Image 1 (cartoon, rainbow, N blue to C red):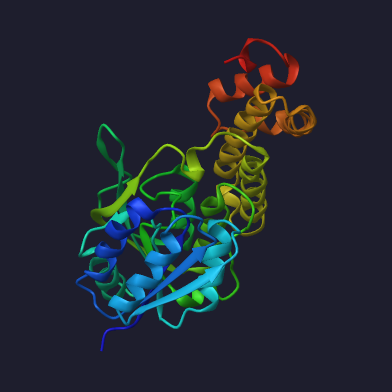
Image 2: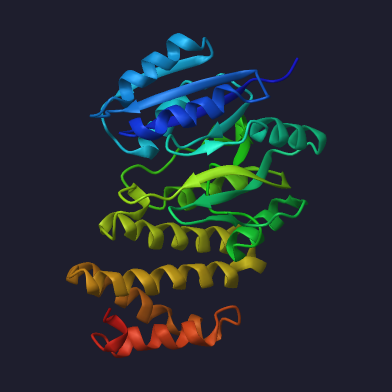
Length: 311
């Protein structure tokens, strides 16, 4: 018998998108599903729609909770999982009917802990395939390398399926942005093998007003926190990848320092600039950091308030 896949769907104020998302999930060619809808304190009709869908399909569970953000909703869903595999689907996105079957079959055929595919970014004007359409298999170190290089593997949780055991010791960071980046590298570190298939069957809807595109705030500074933690993990377990991790960290640090200046976050800007200043010797020695990024770091540190900080 096919193994049970638990599909966790955080739901918050998506009533005009929700039915399309749910239709794409319940109509999957892979039928042995547990669909966990976590209504994260919606103030529109999304919570009611969750209950309506539960009445239509016995595979659906509904959890209503106070608003805590997508990470909080995913974590609540993880506590209720009974499947052998886990998939995360955002409630304003949708998937092809073969999405889960193709990923599951690939994972089983290759004895992999994770199966991944690309996704298609849908905007008002165009559809764009993101990330690799090639087939490949990665061991733990290659997963990390591809992750750090943004090479064929996205930073997103939703275009993959995972063995449940990978989340035994992992939960999503709550109250922060960039939570996928802050989670995915830890999941990769728990896994032994990943298979990537050349099918982009996840449709990511980029819309105005979504959390990801609602502007810069202090919550975005988690990007610096997460990439700094990635550097520390590489130093401990993957020393050959430290320079790649530092490149990702400096990218986040440069951008957040500039955005704090633009946003008038003086305290945070000063703290990040000091972090960057201490890192300048490593930046100059790092062969993986391009010259343009090195120059940008130096300009931020030694010419604060100059043209680089202006819009």
